Length: 351
Image (cartoon, rainbow, N blue to C red; front, side, top):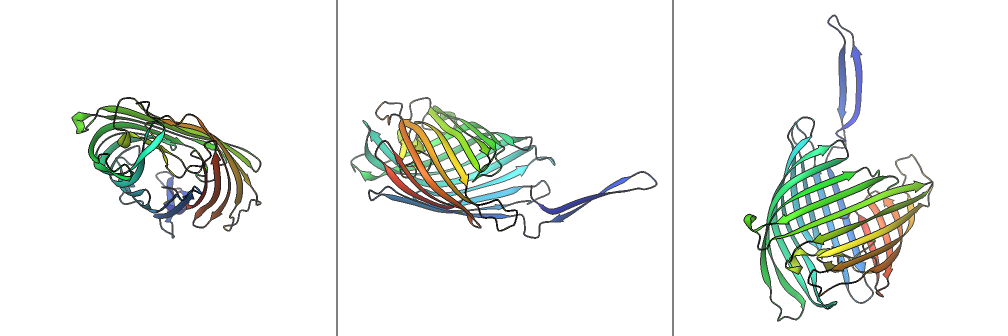
């Protein structure tokens, strides 16, 4: 949990038996975390995107180890998210986690594979999760949520209607994570599965189901690392496209496209990422490694009404990454067989 700087123990003999004495010294630097992030992308055709964000996590709020996470992001994808994570027992096995969300994001509406409009989708909502930790590496959550918002035509045919929507849903989430480093992994795997049912009995305008799976597996040989993985998302019933779409696009998310520039009710992505450390490993606090890498990707986005199907797109990227005190600094160049190219710059964490 990273609450302590040093933990020592000793056994003290006594007339009634031995006593185990544990001495724990709290971290002098504190247990709260502030993380910053910045990402930029440009497609060489006059379109660019940027986001800047920060997250703050306050740990150890009470005796059971409650945590409060708040995340703010400005730019093309604006977001305010806050969650209070409250364990229900001393072993932090069971927990509840209420949350609030406000976001605004651009989503393209596509017909016959041609974009006809770009909507600005705004969503506000709240939810409550009940979950259980699985050992030290996984968790499962069951939750309900309610959201509402509107979508307005930002670019394109202004005769297309603006509309509002309401969502009510319940869902199940499973996550498992043994990756040793979130930015430059050497070993481990990450798995995430989300199942969600939108239901009028919870206030939803429409009844439909969605699920999404993502996974990554890191394998290393000397200074070389391969990360194999991908993501797959499906919308199983008829629903409004703008509100039910998944987003693709960006560095190693079909490189060559701008961040989140592909929208579809169903998405698939497979990829292989290669990393090679260029600087020798150091055990000093000033070890800031430099990496050279490349990726190969293949993916697709499509809607249930058959009015949009991107077909399978092959993409690749080259990137240079440097671990800085503010987080990783990445410069990437991506391209694909749709004749799309883009430059990306990321500093710090992605939110």
